[in-house]
Image 1: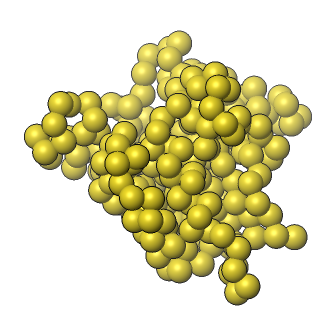
Image 2: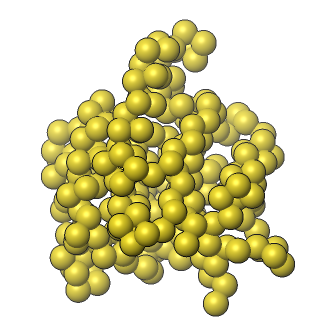
Length: 226
């Protein structure tokens, strides 16, 4: 199968579905990861004054993480960090439509629409728009993933609320997810922060226990063609 992962920022792909990516690669599927935003310029006052070395380093971190997950292809874009709401939705949609034309995915994983982070919410809307069902589309399922420190920190106040209905067994690939996250040394935090390695492991074990597994990643099924 061809699988497309759409992420707003570098590290969202690992946090949300890193174990699933590694599992899909092991099973022989073709996985492409598209990272829409540059992921860092909102931390300063002016985007134009952002440190280009930091931007380059973060991009290199994403490539290193992709290697840890099995050598998946990563495409980078340059949408403004935490400012996706300033970009015409049509522009994002057209980029994702082009990705779908290129990848011809049977499965898409994307951000959840009820996240605290505005870029996640806009990415969700843009992906659903770009992936709207067409007669000759190969797409069979679209899933939304959670991102620690964004999905749960919305405190279920923003619609849609994350209601996971699908649990992917990542017992055999959890350590690859952890190793990939370690490539993002500037994005990880110390426990008890949700993006700490300890919490990522605990979250995988928690969702695993929900589904009778040792470790799992949770997804909300948005659309399926059966």
